[in-house]
Image 1 (cartoon, helix red, strand yellow):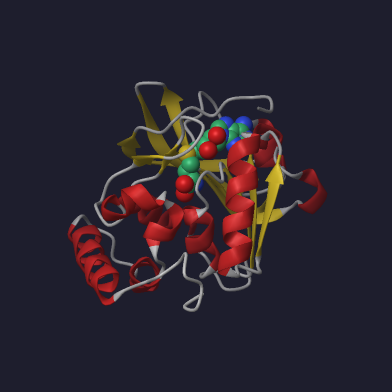
Image 2 (image 1 turned 90 degrees about the horizontal axis):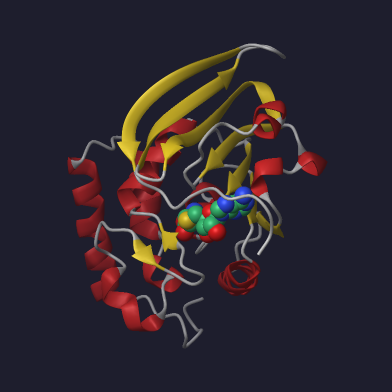
Length: 220
Ligand code: SAH
């Protein structure tokens, strides 16, 4: 990575990342392992070159296909709710830039990430390969259907706003596993953490409000 001229991570970038970590901590993220990962991953690799200076602001930012890279605070917030363990196999719905997938991959055994937009899927697949993320697998599929081939998952994370929780995702969760999903309408969603207590029982906790791009069905 360091020898790849397209991807340079300078002293200045590392300094900006340190500041970003303290901003996220001051907003209430306490999990040190997650803060360390945010401090480690060069977020500017996940944005187009021209927007490099935006990478370390705690803001969402437009990427290709009218989608966004989530705000770093939101990435940390959703990751914290997953209570990841090193052995976990995690399904992410909404690959986007691949940044959230990269964060997850540092904290669990394997990440399966699904994206419905073909252009984004292709772009991000190339990027993650180039950066050497060997424990992330990407799929160009409709994530509302989950990824039944590799189910059940220990944890499932949805990074787009859903109007309701897709049944397929509940079905593909292990007993004792968590699904973290923002549910609401286009104006805003509440973050839910749903625990699968038994084959048919779920326990839902509600957290803060967010605004994500919509979870849409079908492929593009
Ligand atoms: N996790 C991303 C955030 C991307 S924004 C990141 O770290 O950058 C949400 C993404 O969800 C968008 O790329 C959008 O195309 C995708 N998406 C929306 N509906 C989807 C669906 N049904 N299946 C898979 N991806 C979906």
